[in-house]
Image (cartoon, rainbow, N blue to C red; front, side, top):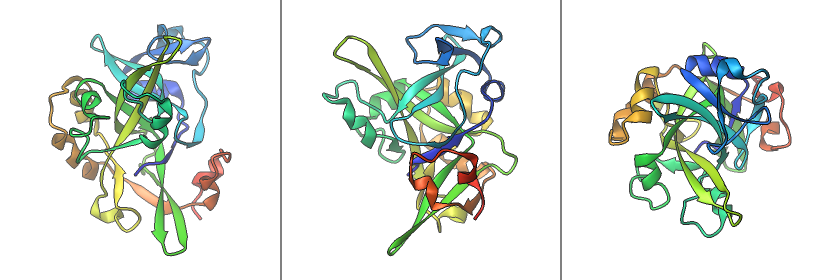
Length: 239
């Protein structure tokens, strides 16, 4: 699974790497899809701050395609199906298994109609052993931002406002890192990002192999990352 990740890169660098033309903004901060979108040159301050320990239910930036342009907006991490009676279900829906997402009522509609890319500098994963779990940090060797395949959904709140949420797709870990964990996020190469966002009929299987094409490195980090209150660059330090 993917239960924690980092996003510390400057928002404008992210926008450039992922060809984002606008960001949903409300009172100077990144906002959800119901908020006005501003072009990058209209944004005076950073719309979001670095997060070294992104956890479930946190607001996360994600890239969607609207009117043939890429838009960066905020989503609650943990997908809430439109038919859900209680939004608390989202805390258990942070990941969607790529092998079964098309069959699950919670994910199948979003997989076809509402795809997104979740930018991340890296993610944390725990290597399990009897009585002990050791956290590792995964990232690209060149420190480029990774594009994680995601899906999103909207849920109507009692006051009529829409709550936007997202989940990250996962797949079987590639062989060189399976000794740490048996799952990993679905990683999108730059060549596949456009088809992921704009070709919802594209079989999910087409992107699963791209994870092997993305250069990765991993190292052991401090157990302090297990506490969501800890949020600093030291969490990523090689132990």
